[in-house]
Length: 311
Image (cartoon, rainbow, N blue to C red):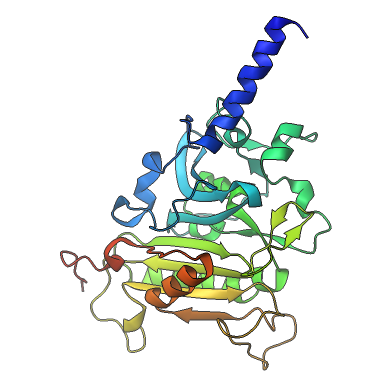
C-alpha cells in the first residue's frame, strides 16, 4: 500500500472511532441532544442514561429534525425515542427503510439514508440492517410510531432502523398498538398544547437475547407521556392520567409476571403480550432497577407549578 493510501486509511479509521471515545461528530449523531432538545419537556433529556455506550441521535430527514433517539451501539438498537405527539395527517407511508450514515462514518451526511440493494459492509458492522430481521419471527417495532407523527415527512422519518427494536407480532399489532391509539385519543381529547412522549425498550435482566446474533431483543416495551397543559374538567377516571402516565408491555410471553401480569382470558394470539398502565413514578422505579441507575424521564416530573390545567 502506498504511503498516501495508508494515510487515508488511517485517517478514515480514526474518524470512525471518534464517536466511541467521545470525539465530536457533526450533524444529528453527537455526544448530546443539543440540536433537538425541543423534543424533551423543558428541553431536558432523561437523567441517568448518560453512558458511553449510548449514542444520542437527532433524527434528521429532509433537512429537518423529527424526533430524538438514544442508540445502543453494541446492541444495534435504540434504548428510547423521544418526540412530540402530533396526530397523523393522511395515510401511513410506504415502508421505505433507512439507516444512519454517521454511525458508520462521523463525516458522512447528517441525513438518514435509504438502504441500497447491496449494503456496504461498514454499515452492516455499525448498526442494524434489514437482513437482521428477515426470518427472525420478529416485527420491526417503532419506538416513535408513524401514527404519532403529523405530516407525511414526519411519518416517513420514523422508518429508520435506529428507531426500531425486535418486537413480537402479538405485541406490535395487539396490546401495544391499542396503547398507542389510547395515548393518541387522550392527546386529542384532553391535552392542550404539547404532549411529550418517550418510548423505549427494556433489556432482559440477566442474559442479552439476540436476533441474528446482532440485534438485542427487549423483554419489555415501555412508554411515558407528559402533558403539562390539559383540560381542568377531566371525566371521572381520567384525572389520574394527567399530566403524566406510563405503561410497560410484555414482549416475551414466557417472562414472569412481576412487572406485567398475564390476562389468561384474552384470545391466544395476544395472550402474554399484556400491557400494564401505571404512574410515571412506578415506571421510573422499574427502569431504575432494571438498568441499575436512577432514572428520571421528565424534568420536575412534568409538574411545573407555573403551568396549570385549562378549561
